[in-house]
Image 1: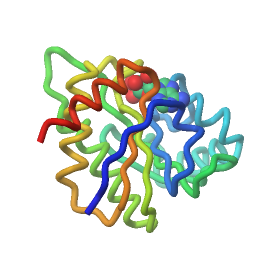
Image 2: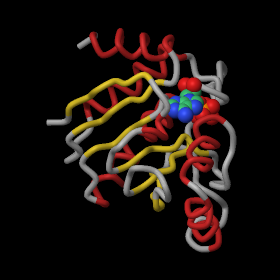
Image 3: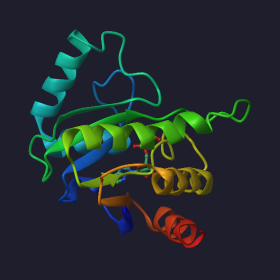
Length: 171
Ligand code: ADP
């Protein structure tokens, strides 16, 4: 049984086995939560991301996929980088967003991570409507077949936190 918990705060302050990063396909850093993770996690994370780009991920990480690195100075063992889809009104990319959560949990299982912190992937710079992003996050995690014991959604502001509280209440 996976327990889903909610926290309002900065994901880089969490103590968990794995912190999920809403990365971009370059894996070489960006704004939002990605920038915060690299800033607080230190250069070891970027160094490993560069190695991934030089080896298995020459073209970068595809949308909906996930890959792990060290967590550097963060209070976690791993960062799991996943690339959310950019919101599109013309095209339904929901399956790609669901894939981010599923693939991150699959990687967490491979690593043996039991506690995993997620941000609200795609709901920042990538423009996904918060309520729909929360729905997909909660539904996908609840449906996942995983050995992860706690999925902790870490929401950066009150609005995101309240949206997830509301969503978690729907069963
Ligand atoms: P994306 O490009 O996938 O939209 P962003 O990092 O822009 O990624 O935003 C994803 C979500 O993460 C947004 O809801 C944003 O408010 C939130 N966020 C930004 N910084 C942090 C942080 N330090 N901890 C947790 N969530 C954060």
